Length: 550
Ligand code: HAS
Picture 1 (cartoon, rainbow, N blue to C red):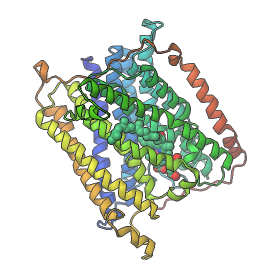
Picture 2 (cartoon, rainbow, N blue to C red; picture 1 turned 120 degrees about the vertical axis):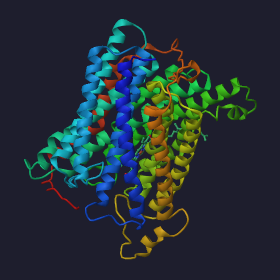
Picture 3 (cartoon, helix red, strand yellow; picture 1 turned 90 degrees about the vertical axis):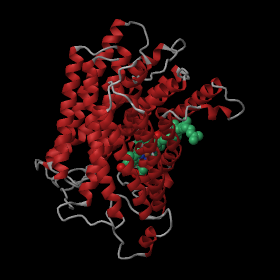
Picture 4 (cartoon, helix red, strand yellow; picture 1 turned 90 degrees about the horizontal axis):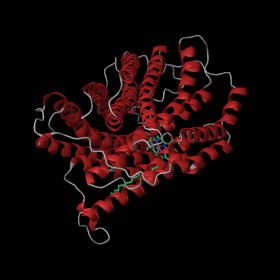
C-alpha cells in the first residue's frame, strides 16, 4: 500500500476527473438530441456552448486529472513514497490545473467561450478562457516536474539501473507532453491572449492552427500512453504472466517521443497556406507513428496466447477461451483494445492524403475520436477505476459492484457501437461535424441523414442515450468506492494494484538515455516544422479580427 498522503493526492485528482466526466457526459447527451432535432434549448443556452463544455471537460480535463491520479499512484508504488518537496509540487500543480479548469469552465458556462475544444481562431472567446487554458498547461507542467523530480531521486539512489517499467513509461509520456505543449503555449501566450484582450487587433489564423496541431496530435498520445501502460503492465498481471518483452515495451514508448509530434499537418491537409511537400512529409511521419501501436498490438496478442496456453489452452485459438473473461478489470480493457482495431484503422484512413478529402470536417472524424479516446482510452480508464479507487480508499469492490461494472462496460460498448457507427456512416454521406441541427433547407442530401437504420441521427441519439446511462452507472460505482462501500478489513477483500513483473535482464541501457530521444525528436520536429512555420511567419497575412458567432 502506498503512503496515505500520496493516496490523498491521487484521489483528489481522480475525484476532479469524475466531476468533469459527469458534466461532460450530460452535455454529450444534450448534443445528440439537439442534432436529431428532438430538443430545443432555452434561449440562454447554446448548442456550441454545450459542445465546448463536452469537448473541454471530457477530452481535456477528465483525461488529464485521471492520468495524473494514475501516474501519482503508480510512481509512488514503483519508486517508493514521495518526498515532501515532490508532494508539495504535486499539490501546487493540482491546484493550478484546477484553477485553470474552473476559469475556463466558468467562461464556457457564462457563454463567453463557445469556441469548442480546438478553440480555432478567428472564433474569439473571452481572454480569461485562454488564461484558464494556459493555467491548465502550467499546472500539468508543475505536476510533471514533481514526478520527474521523484524519478531523479530514485535514479540517484539506484545508479546504473534501469527504472521500473511504470516509471519509465510515465517519464516518456511526460517528456512527450512537455515538448508537445510548447506549441500551444506559444500560440496561447503570444497570439490568443493579446488578441482576446484587445492588445492586438488581429490573429494569424494559419499560424495559430499549426501551433495548435503541433500540440493537438501528441495530445491524443498523452491520452493513449497511460492506457497503453495499463495494457503493458496491468493486463499481464491479471493474466498471471510477465510483461511479454520489456525492451519492446520501452522501445514502443520512445518511438512516441520521436514520431507523435512532427505530424500535426495531417489535421490540416485541406488547409491552404501549407505546401504539399510539408503535408506529404508529415503524412509519412504519421505512418511512422502507427508502428509503436502495431508493436503494442503484437505484444498484446503474444501476452494473451502465452497466458491462455499456460492455463491449458490448446490448438490454434484454444488459448482464447482460457482468458479470465469474468474478471471485469480484464474484460473492460480487452474490449477497449478491440475498439482500437477499427479506431486505429480509421486513423490510417484519415491520414491518407486523398481519403482525408472525403472525411475531413464530417461526422466521420467524430466517430473516429469516439472509438479512440472515447473507448480504447476511456474504457481502459474505467477498467483502471474499478481497482484504483478501492485500492486508494481501502474500500471493498463488492460482488454487486462487479456485476454493475460488467453492465457498465457492456452498455458503454453497445452505445458506442451504435453512436460511432452512425457517425462514421453519416460522415461518408457528407453530414458535417461541429454543427447544430440543420436540414439545409430540406436539401435531399441532408434529409438522407435521417433515413436508414445506421445512417441516421436517431441511431446516434439512441447510442448517446445508452452511453449516458452507462456513464451514470460508472459515477455510481465511483461514489460508492470513494465514500460508501464498506472498508476492506480482511486481506481477501483488499484490492491490490495489479502491476506485472517485467524482465529487464536483456533490456539495453541506452533505451533510458533520454537525451538521445529528446535530441532525435528535436531534429525531426525541426525537419518537419522549421521551414513551413518560418514561411508562415515571414509571409504573414494581415490576420483576422475576432468573431463571435453565438
Ligand atoms: Fe486520430 C483526428 C489520424 C489515433 C484522436 N484523432 C482525430 C481527432 C481526435 C483523434 C480527437 O491523419 C479529431 C481532432 C479534431 O477535433 O479535429 N489518429 C490518426 C492516426 C492514428 C490516430 C494515424 N486518434 C488516434 C488516437 C486518438 C485519436 C489514439 C485518441 C486517443 N486522427 C488522425 C487524423 C485526423 C485525426 C489524420 C485528422 C482528421 C481530419 O481530417 O480532421 C494512429 O495512432 C492509429 C494507430 C493505431 C492502430 C491500431 C492498433 C491496434 C491495437 C489494438 C490491438 C487489439 C488487441 C485486442 C490486442 C494501427 C493496439 C484483440 C481483440 C480482438 C477482438 C481480436
